[in-house]
Image 1 (tube, helix red, strand yellow):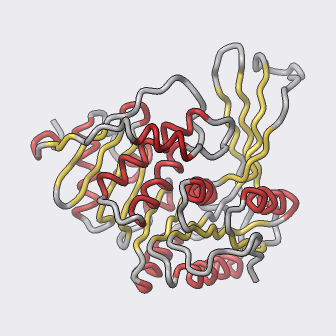
Image 2 (spheres, rainbow, N blue to C red):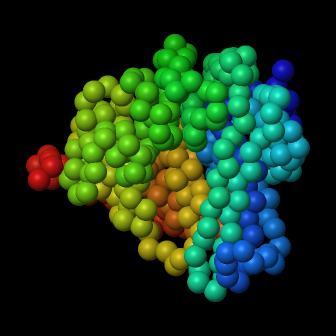
Length: 330
């Protein structure tokens, strides 16, 4: 049985799924050198993994949310404790293997960041089925399911398609943010697919060197029925939105340098919150851009502040419509 702590909301509007959670460990050192022992500064621990990050930010923004994730070992226990301390509602699906760690080192002398992402535990077929069962139970009365992050070892490549099929059966919209095989094996049933340019390249198998090619590829996914909406995040260049009705370009919010860890998850979280508020998609995406920018102001993978997101949202510009010929490869 899941282990909720604190007690989850009875009818969450947003349910997130994280199949490969991580205990995020962040520290800093003056300079990264090979062979030498590196004396690090104070260490920060945060609950991590795509869907957990989404749930954390959605909770901070006032969303009604429940995070579902498999976890085991002492690392899994610490993730549960940290979420409980923050008040984020969750269901922990017990697994035999220990949850992974993710290690980030900030080099203070250069401002560079080094991220070491460890592989996740191997989940048995029974544990995978248990995750789907708990997701189905949690999502029955939800408005949105957000499946985010990589798939751990042992999980079948079509797992997210199974999640999409479940959401279709429950008449719940699915937001998906993943990469690799987990993305390539999704063929239908996604409401909003959020991806980076790299993930979009992996999905279509082309270099996509220009914005026009990127937008064209996004519309291919829409036209093929894999997703109703595709949002391509461009980092400090903003984002591109492709729907059946057209294309739009969103400008980024100029920000001073900072850690971009978790910015994409914050974007997804804010979009989900905006949609659950009944906002139009374009307005929800603007809130997502503000939340992504606000993550640059936080240490490690700590959630952004609601006041910062609202202040930055007020500064976001309306998107520019893109003519049909602009999205065609040249």
